[in-house]
Length: 200
Image (cartoon, rainbow, N blue to C red):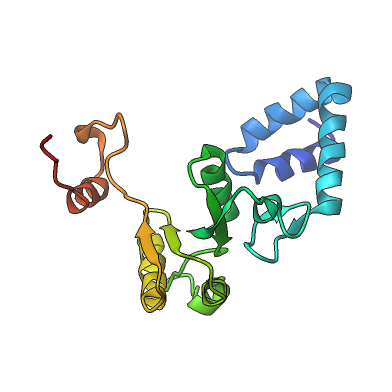
């Protein structure tokens, strides 16, 4: 049996996404075997982040400066705004380097079952950003869930009177996906999102 302190560390790590009790135990054993090269640098990095972490007052990103590095980047297109549910979605899209504009993090999605209403997430803040002007395009990058699509539909309705291009990420068959492995919801979305083939 490990000491209570080590067990507490295992339990704390097992609460992280993708880590169950077994994976957390392996991670702790790895850290304990190499404290100088793994545990101490991780602890120091976590302390620095904990001391300096802030939420960006403009977009809702998590960074060590406010405004965040994305909002401060002069190379980004000020006129394009991508709306995401959470910071993890922002980071995933930004890592792809495919969207040249700025972001807006809602901090959740509408859900009647969970009691999440429009005023519980940053929809009003999004509307304020659009009302200030200078934004020509809003891309709704909600997850392909019922709640995500409900949120996208609600935001689209709220933005319909603004003079901007409004688009949404397409959903359907992933590249390399085989039809017989896809669920019915994905197939239905792919059929609804079908587009004509141009004959060149």
